[in-house]
Length: 193
Image 1: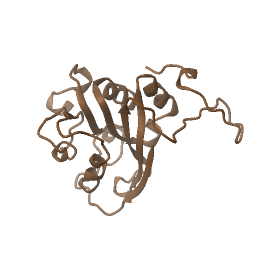
Image 2 (image 1 turned 60 degrees about the vertical axis):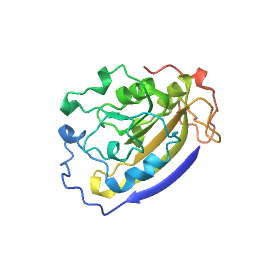
Image 3 (image 1 turned 90 degrees about the horizontal axis):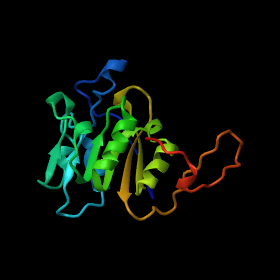
Image 4 (image 1 turned 60 degrees about the horizontal axis):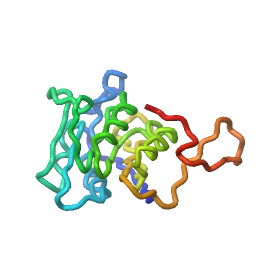
């Protein structure tokens, strides 16, 4: 797996939310970083793409194909109710529904998915559950977007279907025991659904 780090500090966010709970799902991805994310997707020329949370369309508008579709709940197109499949599903998910979107994106993906979410949304348990479904972490981009104003780290994860990622171990311990961690296989952890 590859790890990338960068931050976006001064891009102006025209509709910057007040960060009340009602605004948590209206935090839009800066255009300046979307192409970097899309370039991390190991897609082929003829692959189909889906932006399951269109927002202002910055992911959708930068997909490298016309073979694409979008969903947006505010436009009465609910991805969580869709049964369609795509080669790649890529988006910035609503912060209030990480579990629902993470697993629905996996279900709708034939080759993989890219997901921008709060770092604490992609738990070790969820990564293990995705491994049981055949999706492995291919890369992580760690970023802090200062203009979002809420101080939480946000990551862009790329999961691919099939071969296990190299140099990536997810370790879980039930109690903090210093450095005594045990590596375990995906089958050792409960299913999160």
